[in-house]
Length: 216
Image (cartoon, rainbow, N blue to C red; front, side, top):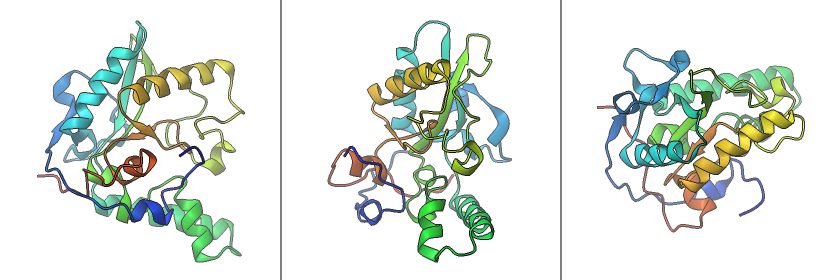
């Protein structure tokens, strides 16, 4: 599929899940650069499915010398995903009092996945960016987790309103992650997932392998 499909699209929710049972693992046990900005008391943010970890390691190996992945967030408990979605939808409702519930739902899903299909809550998604060899975050045009409103759409992966340098860094990240088997959510240059409903739809797979999961 080449057109932009939002997480709110009914096609995403319609993809069946055949849970493979892979466990969640902690990326901090595998020498990744992990940024603390999304850290939580249980360390949930640093967990991903076993197969996601393997693909992250592959993506890291595809980056040029002196450039590394900076891991921001992986697993997100369902209750936290619900809170993020509701807060952002309510923020949009305040700014756009004339919008319908459906318009708010679709607009919110550009930035936060609806809880019922959220890749993060399946341990299938990662938010990552790039860092130099000293761990300093590279310029990719906006901050990670910038909203479309805040960034004037520059958070979209192929946004035209970023510098050539930022675009170059985005393409380094995108190419490494896609070649390692991830699908990018193109409203967010930092968000990638694999084997969840969204990825399965984009690849026209018959089902997803990762569904909602609880941290042990």
